[in-house]
Length: 276
Image 1 (cartoon, rainbow, N blue to C red):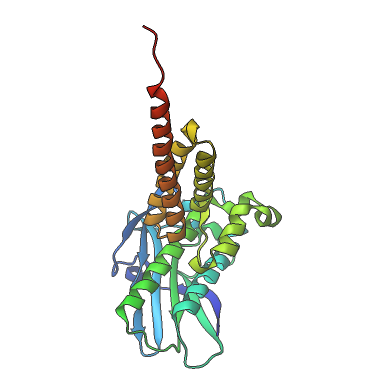
Image 2 (cartoon, rainbow, N blue to C red):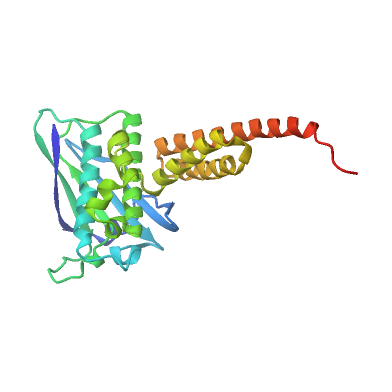
């Protein structure tokens, strides 16, 4: 089974556009605080509809609001990236009665029809996800997991839009970046771009390793504890479980070897006589 995203635009009522029917959850994304709207799955017959939006002060944000310096031609690439990520979640959790290629409709909602000459950066962070002809989903646990996965992937994507990481590196540079290779090859099951947390997780493990080799120095263990703790906390907020575990491991290793180094230093100081 495979899922293909069909992207387009839809005009929606004001109440739906501003998501007044669903709760707005404040989330820290990068250094910004946004209001995320990810509606519960609305099931009717054999179709499911989900509404997603990024807002602040009851206003729907645009690409320009999140990153005024983004290149206009990158907007389409980011929209395509979001559709691919949502497709991956749909393939993982949704079932169809037949094994074939199925369409998932992603509409970029607005209050009025957009014109061809409109600024791409003014595209709203307001999306409607529609999946048709699926088998019913009745398990509340599975529905909750789908909702959390969509929210996590949406927040990760928004963080990339804010930092515009794809603008800063070419495709060839990204292929050579070890953090990108780790994200793509070793952590595919997370189905999300781990972003800045993956880089900090790697460095915290490196410092933890240095703390094991040079435990008498203390500095490496301290860095591993602080950085690992930060990674674990931020990853927990964003539901990035792999990075959270790596950060916890680095912190624990740092704490353990700090204790070992302190014990060795204490024993050595017993034989040292200070001058009168």
